Amino acid sequence: MLVREGQALVEVNLEDYLDTGLFLDHRPIRREINKLASGKSFLNLFCYTSVVTVQAAIGGAKRTLSVDMSNTYLDWSERNFRQNHLDLARHRLLREDCLKFLHLQSLAPEEKFDLIFWIRRHFPTLNEWKRFWIFSVIMYVLSSSRCACWKRAGY
Image (cartoon, rainbow, N blue to C red; front, top):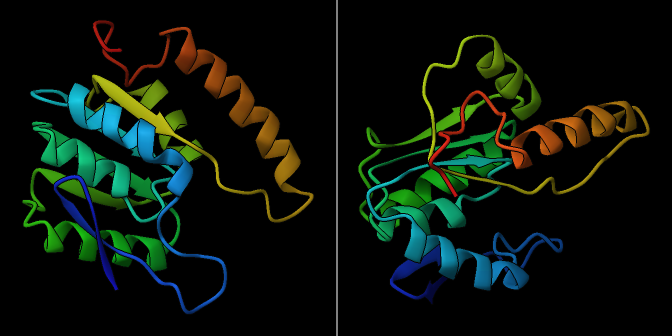
């Protein structure tokens, strides 16, 4: 099923599980990113179905990168991109562990981004707590403008 949010059409699944593909409580954040994105580069970590990226692209982001480990969500993201006629060369999807991606970027940043969005969805196992600690450190680094892939002039 497709739903409209602003100018975007996004796929939702109201049939299976609790996983609808759209976090309703993120609507104000998506609206704000849509306003801020014009002419900027945008990175979406743990992108889920990339609805935030779709809003950034529709808002005029010059390029985006959406990163997630899940092929299921990246496929869903691609459908959302295609539904909104987004250029997949400018608005890219990457299957990668986000923590590994940030680590590799800290060693040799390939590209920098004006806007970075990340929300970790869940921690499925107890082993994830070690990674949660690492992620918390990374969040501190990002929030203090020291991330290698964040442009200094970014928001």
